[in-house]
Image (cartoon, rainbow, N blue to C red; front, top):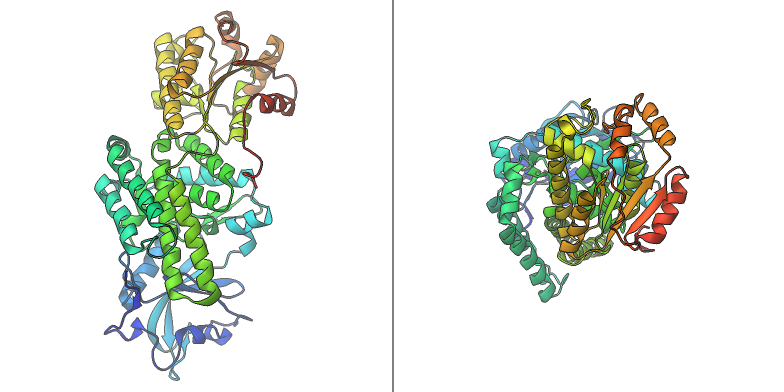
Length: 544
């Protein structure tokens, strides 16, 4: 694709002859008083960001690509206005507004009050670099809690995001196919000597075949309302994690609905792909699992490999385009980044690093099964699919609303319980089809319930393990009394404990190789040590 700073009838389409815009805006005196002590410049393929000690001024480059056209001053102003408006959704208070770039009588550009308006800029608060996601990861300060907070915030953002007919149209297979083909047309990774011709063909074939072969899946995502006006550029260097737990996400796609409006999985896969690109596949999988639970969207596993590959190719393309605009060390870094992302796009169609397994975690009410399942999900970086949330999804109620029916009545009557377990297995099957492990959290109180989980593993040709959590009845009752004072997803309560326990069928049908009984009265870490010896978790070298 031809990249150019095109000539234009509007004088601001290129730096005016009276002064060089970049050189002028690197002067501290070009900024409002009190003038900053220094100014630094950071560039992308579409913007120049001039950064002072406390603020940032982003000026769009007068460039044209297949996916944007910033050649005119009006186009750049509109993009600046859209950027401020759209980013208020996830970065409230960070974007201060749109300001004019002026040229004084001497021909110098500045952000002061006098002179001819020759361009526009987005004015922002400068967020500390050390809080940025990629910087935190490099410094070792990006925690599991940060990953979980990102999953929760993005799931909430998607739940509130626009999802009208026009938005949904961007998630159609035709729209996605257009984006995919455009990626390959703009940058041929083999022609750029960033992949071999055979590898480039493999990437393109995987993405187009996935779209073709999973047509009903993509169509179902549209009808289920999973196409949203999202962010479009969710990567680590756009996430800022504050020391008090606050999270700010900047730099959404402002120039095109076509790239911002998409399946929520396209957003999610961008960040999971970026975590993998930074060498943390375990965090990528944890993020996916936490998002799936928060958004009640385990079906994203049916399309996440496609979107991770697509997003990786997009990042490779952007880096390749950046390399065309730069030279020397900057060009070398851009090319290395392009190679890494094209290699990730290639890996999207290949076998995952961690082999899939079905782990069913069961036990009576308050036996500690949900605690063990959650910790095991963390160990495996696997999604945990639990009966409580699944039941409430089927009932159309919030996870923390409770049903006070008697045992085995109302929401817990046998017919409803059958529906819940069927949905558990359906969701788990979707995860397994993506080649990932899955943890099931339910009572599994009957042989039929356990057989369903075991048959699921057999159907997919993966190992099966049943973890039975046990605690003395008096300990379970004490836990239930504490639970009544807390917010909980579980409907288990003291009034039905006895009747529930009376209907539990011991797992005598399972061979010793598939059954592990754990005493949840012991410290959790001791239980996890036992589980680590029983189950294959992440190999050394893939978590740092």
